[in-house]
Amino acid sequence: MRAVKAGAVYVALVFAAGFLFGTVRVLWLAPRVGAPAAVALELPLILLVSWIACGWCLDRFLPAARPGERMLMGGSAFAMLMAAELVLSTVFFGNSLATYFDALLSPEGLLGLAGQALFGAMPLIRALRPNRRD
Image (cartoon, rainbow, N blue to C red; front, side, top):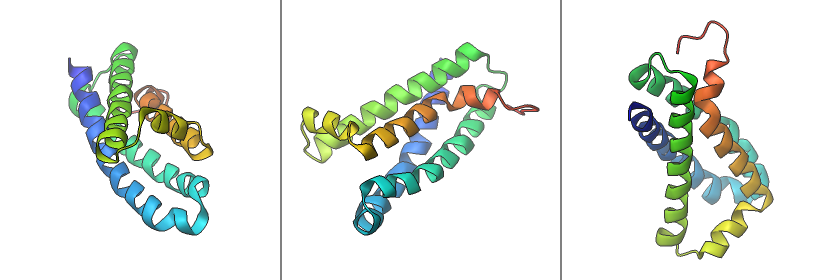
């Protein structure tokens, strides 16, 4: 349960930052540079937030995390993120399921999905660092 709790906090922190970044991307950046370029510019920032939030969650909830716990944290966070995005798209923005899944297959959607996969893998990625603290 600690790993799922860590995943929930991790996704909440990154989702909040992503919501703010996404608002700027959609309303300001994308009209100027196009949607794929806007996502490409946003992605390093959200991955940096993910790196920091992941480290904080590991330190706070799983200080001696084994690979299985890291996988559970990242996997549960990824599942929660995808569910939150689906709900946001369909319930709050009124998109159909088909529209949501079609958007994932666009160039910017695939780039975002790759970033989301890295977000989910971040707890394991952090374990690969030499001289790691977490």
